[in-house]
Image 1 (cartoon, one colour):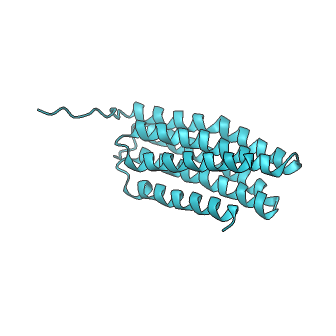
Image 2: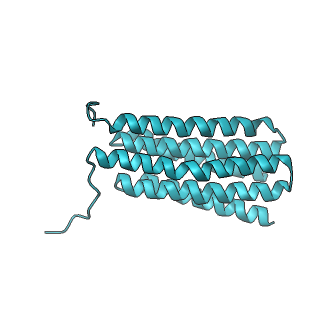
Length: 88
Length: 98
């Protein structure tokens, strides 16, 4: 049981727990919060894998994933803000 | 040793942040725990990984990712809260016994 196994296991289990809020969330904003959390955790998993497995390419993938997650969160929240999208 | 201390601190923050996501009753309270989980947990975990790696080009790239996460997570949280407040989501109140 090495350190990287513990880190990736804890992050994966907490991401699966946050997936509960994505599926059963009452409003779209709850789902958006949980998706933001899962995206951040995937970035952390990639950085841990890059450090412990000596694969430097994972850090570039993690940075691009963080940028895409941020832009998508901003875009979806701006979309939900407009009044004419009739949803609950 | 210090690196693993930081990593354990980050994992504890992340675990309790996710517990708050599941248990809390409202959008705004969930957003508060999510923001704490992102900021404190991610920063502690990445600082621990940087300390374990030492001064290197890899640790410099981790620093870039850390600064990017620190800049963008509050902006995303504020955008979600502003969008929910504009659409008229009321904050949660504790029900009084009558």
